Length: 282
Image 1 (cartoon, rainbow, N blue to C red):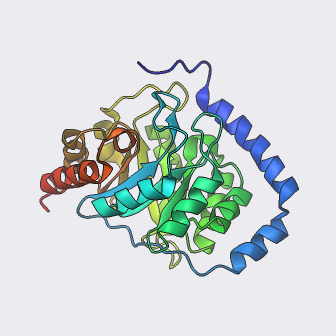
Image 2 (image 1 turned 180 degrees about the horizontal axis):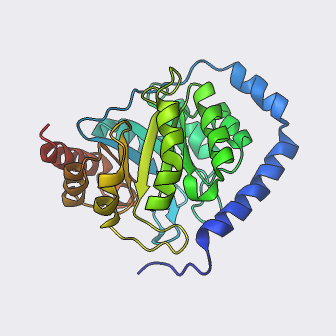
């Protein structure tokens, strides 16, 4: 049974993200953070393909909809190594503390353990400072949620990520969000900095209520631009589900809960990949 989630979940996450932002700025001023980032080598950043089927495997300690997914002894770097063994193209790490029990320390641990594998910070980002914060922790990419960001702010965060050599997964939930951000994403993807680094994600989970509607993948697929790689997010918990989204044209799936719950995450990831690739013909 899913945990009860009262009110507008996304609005609450936005509010707490702003609070965390203020605390982080007070602790590490932006000029200091930029100096830390400037001292780092370029991040690993794959050219995400439109073809085939690939996996972004996620490390998360808890799901607000499903409850705890791992005990306090979870070693995020070891979990990420299992994902790498499965053939994941990238790893996502939840850093939101209140509902997901994540932390930037988890991100740092995974990035240090897998320096050649692109690692994405998954959080409810509201400011470009948090993109810098992700890069300073070693991340090669960030999740940006269209529903949380006004167009100008989304453009700012996307531009910050690409300027740092990072990739960005921009997530939409409905046709309105898709229409609103597609021109921005296609324009960014056509630049040298953005080529192969701008991903368009469809989340079948409504982040306001946390309800899942798997049919949303099919409903939005005809409207998705073929200039961008498509990522299916949430609800991919079986090889059959992976095959379904692959047949619809999604070239990547972001999977967390199913892999966190699996007794053998590497084997579970390989099964998802095999099903998706078979459905897409290789």
